[in-house]
Structure formats: C-alpha cells, structure tokens
Image: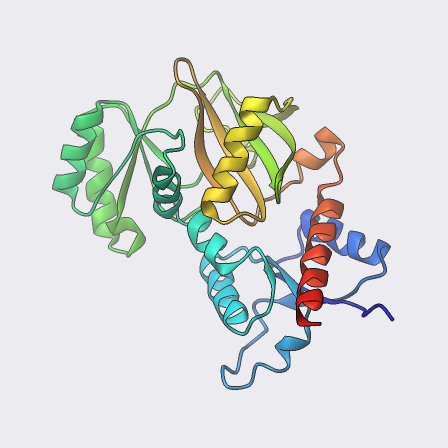
Length: 292
C-alpha cells in the first residue's frame, strides 16, 4: 500500500503564486494544509504534531519568520522546501556573496563595512558609481546608486542614524552597466527550468518596480552558472538573478529562495507552481523511503 503524503504550505498572505500552488496541490489530489505563519506556534518540547507532515513548503514573506520556522522544523527532522540552510544563505545578500565567493563563482565586486568611515574607504577602492543595498530585503527596496562622495556621505549617515542592525552593515556593490535588463532563471534541483529578461529604462529592473518580462532562452553557459550558484547555497527551488557585464559576461547578482513568479509563469508558459509541487512531493516521498 502506498502511503498518502501529508503536505503543509507555510504562507503569510495568499498571493497569486500561493493560489496557483494550492490549485496544483488540489489537482494532484494531495492532502495538504494551509499554515498561516501569523497564527502558528511551536512548542519546542512537543514536536509530534508537526512531525505528521511529510514535507512543508515555505512561502513566508518575512525572511526572519520563515528562517526561524525552518530552523525549528529542520531541527525536528521535518523536510522543507527550501531548507533553513538555503534560506539563511539566500535571504542575506552578504551570506549569498560569501557562498558564491567560496566557490569562485562570477559575481559583481562586493565589499562590506561596519562603520561609515570604513564604508567610505571601501567605496573609494571601487570608484563611483556604486550601489548600496540592505543585506536583507526584496523587491528592489532601499537600494541606492551612489554617484559621488557627497551622496555617499549623506546615504551612509542616514543609514547610521536609522540605527537598526541591518542598517549597521554597509553592503557595497560595484555598479554594473547592464543592457537595460537582467535575467531571472528558475532552478529546481539540478535543472534550470526557464528564464525571463526583466527589462526597464531604470537601473532597477525588478518587475515589482515596473520592469517588464520577456522570454530568455537558456544557453549552456547560463545554465552552468545558475546550477553552480544553486549548489553553492545548498540547492532546492530557487530563482537566480543574473547581470550581463559587457566584458565579464554573466555575473550572479542575487539568489531568491521564496521567489515570486507571477510574471515569469504567464510569459514562459511553464507551469512553475506545478513543478514546485512535484518537487515538494518528491522530497516528501524520499523521506518516507528513508524512514522505511
């Protein structure tokens, strides 16, 4: 007798992606439960109620909430997509850069400093313009293109006054003169599934900021770089953001572990939500086989 899987989907808000995921689960007749991360809680001494899940898909909007829930679930031996290790590496841009650098993978030049004085010195070693990013964040928010020292001093002072832990880490990246676009590649396991260009006249090309999507054909070089990047952070279901440098070719910019795909899926015609569910079910079945 084949054991019936019990699946959980952890979410913060039911966006279009979650609706597609729920529909894919229902089409496959999967026994699943919707887990609102604003309502669930965990008794660390009593994990049995959670151990009834064969796999859980994490779709939290909050990086902090999602990461800490994954840490608890993985500590209890509950399979998740993605794992806490992957979330930790992808949700923090500095951690992503460090993981890529460990394997000498191509990326923009990145520097990190922990005081305004050191940050100014770091910027001078690259030269203007540079981009200053928060280490945690999405949708292209709080990015600043710095064109000269006056602007750098103003932005760095502003971040220092804000005083939060995130604003006390100065993550500085060389500005890449990309050709009015970047590339988002959807990777699942050991396959680069599909990709789009995100095009905009503004230097920030995120679709959340008005960028437009267009199909991108995945060539062998792009596939190799994206799969290498996925392996560097631990693999799973990921979106790899790639910049095109006029001389250095493809550069890995960011890796997303709870990606949105409301633009990518309709443009490419690829059933991303269905493939994601199939991968999740495979993870759940693999754990059952190991247990048996």
